[in-house]
Length: 215
Image 1 (cartoon, rainbow, N blue to C red):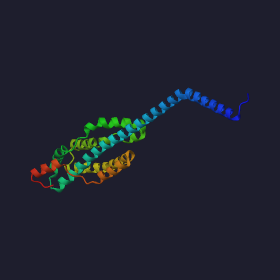
Image 2: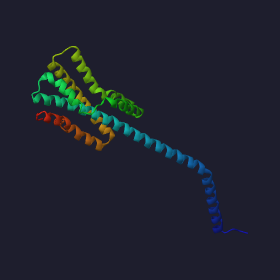
Image 3: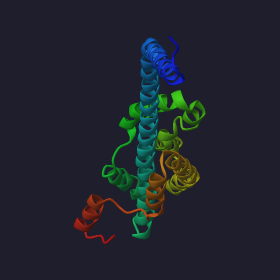
Image 4: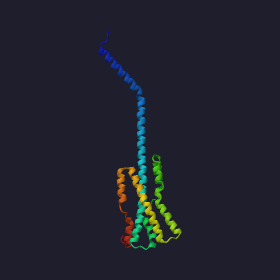
């Protein structure tokens, strides 16, 4: 019995469909494995990016705190001089004023932990930011040296101001760089923060007011 061309074509089509079905069935476990691996890689990459962004945000936040204290302290000293405070009283008043500014000493552990995460992705960047949170600790060293050698108060204050004027621009540049790496919106917000003029802490202004001093 001879088969018509149409029947032969239909039979061939059925054979091809069955063959494709068999191939897909046999490859299904492999395809599932590849898909699972791809999803896992995507998940790990996404989680890695999230940790990277979080570490940058943490380092940036701490450096902004350090800068705030550095800037506010220097602004406060200049303000006290403008108000006519005797030079010999300024160190004591400065110490009182600093009590109203959030302390940055306890942030070192968080800073180093964030840098550790950052180093996994960008070791060079992490290296560059190492110890940048210790700016205010360096100032304490300068003050202690001045006390130990009994430098005149005017000289000690001049040394401290010069030290701050060197450190602050560098700190600003590092903060801007990190903000740009984080995101465009963060960079814009940071530029606005850095552009603001420093202000005396509200509590310190209130204290001066109670003493009858207008700030």
